[in-house]
Image 1 (cartoon, one colour):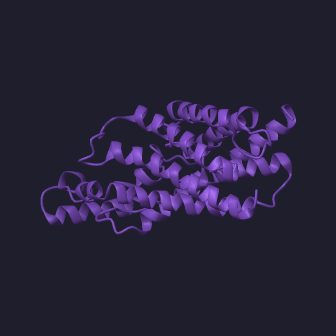
Image 2: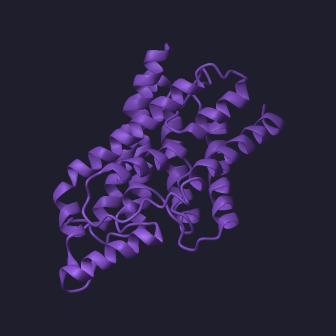
Length: 264
């Protein structure tokens, strides 16, 4: 695979991943969405199918890592770090593009949701402004969960451990069951296996933090949330943002170490 193929494949694939994954979060969250309040089961399966779709689209070009943690684990497994920066650049750019497309697809719903006084504040413009200021001070605005993850209970060591454990499960499943014949990305059957692993992680381990298990999936959309002209959007919770980046990278390194010791 050439560097250009890797970059293009990872950009397209990660954009599709975030478009569909962030899209199901928007569908379940936003006012005037037909799927509003569909629940966690819809989100877990939505993300699983997003992974499967994105992998099938991008695998012929880049091997469909779509996740800096997966790229790191494969580099540790194989000892080849030459393409890591290209993979990571494509993944971050793709995640930002996908998040922006979610905003485009749900533009009207975002506006209706964030100008609804029952959601962003009580009766009167003054209450709405106060609610927005309060959200900014708390760090996480009312639609940040569509773009990025966040803890239900902010306990740093627990939140970090949850992301590490979830990523270990994901990466071990990929390394043992999901790789293509060349061992440099996901194969056809591996895409299906990985999709269901993502659903399983979401249902079992997603409750505490929203299961980022992918640094680009969280950081790219968080940047977009900070940049978009969303009314009353509140903060992007940058104080928490390092956990869904560092946690999955640690988890990937642990999983690669386990694989090299126990399976290689």
